[in-house]
Every structure is written in structure tokens, then in C-alpha cells.
Image (cartoon, rainbow, N blue to C red; front, side, top):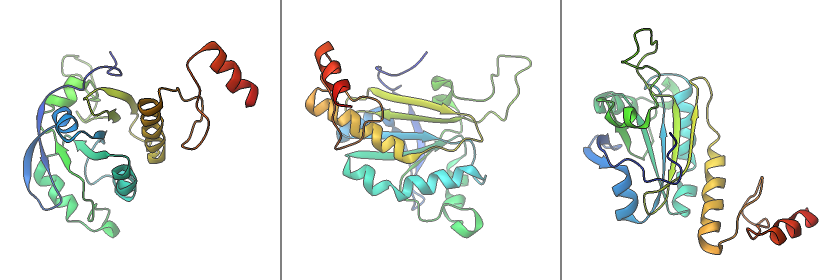
Length: 205
């Protein structure tokens, strides 16, 4: 069952920052208490191949997310110690040195199980998988409500710019009350959610 339109689960998990400091993090409380949006992206494993390309892409876009009042948080089921080792491995060696946003270390899989994003079901006899997460992404607003979720299979890397576009669109709706049509981008026309509004938009495009 999807989470869009609902509050993100209120579950505390371990996390680590780039300095190696560990702390407890509740994503929905973070959004509400800081009055910020959150982009939370899950990846399967540290020290793999597609994952560092995504993590560096989110880091490169970190300032763009910050401009949109949005916090970036990465997550996997690796331990905080493994995260820290990866954070101290250079980019040239497949590491994520230079990444500044926090990484959730959901080694108990408590949050991942609540989100139902694991590739392995311990309750199914013939279930196969590494007991890690798919590439799940959640956009959460300042009230803790999820306004976007998506899940990619392991080999499929994400387009970080699409999350910036979705945040722009949601922020536009919040500010203006208009809805955003297909392929909408910041600066383009939105429309009123009425029959006349749709007709007017389609007549111009």
C-alpha cells in the first residue's frame, strides 16, 4: 500500500554524518521540526557500483535542494561503521568521500520492513534476495506527508533532476493552489483545477 498522501512512518533509526558522528534520526520528525522538505533515497549496498554514482549525484545537487528548503538523506541497511569506511574512501576508488548529507544505517531493517522495500521476504520459504533495499525514493513535505514515492530495481539509477522538478511542482501547488500539467517545469504555465482551466491550458499548448 502506497504512502503518497500519508504521513511517513515515525520510526527512529541510526544515522551517521560525514565526520563519523552517529545519532538517532526520525525522518518525519526532522521534516516537521526543521520545517523543511526531505528527499530520502534508499540504495542497496555500500561499496557497490551504481550506488556511488547516485550518491555523488545527490551531493552535486545538494545546494539546489537546499535552495528549495529540502534536506537530502541517504539510506541503506549497512552499518554506520561500513558507511564511515565508505565515506573515507576516495571517489577514484569507488568511494563517497566528500558527501556531506547524513546516511541512515538501518541495519535492523526496521524502517525498510515498514516501507516494504526489501528484496527478500523472510516469511516466504522460497524468497530469494540479499535482504537489502531496492532504490526507493520518498519526497516528504514540511508536515511529514509523503508527496512522491518511487521504487527502482537494482540496476536502474535515478534521475536526480526529476526530484528537483517534483519539488518545484509541489512547492508551486503549495504557493499558488494551481496544478502542474505533464512535463511542467519551473517558469512554465500551470493551470487551475477546473474544466475551464484545463481547456484554456490545452488551447494554448
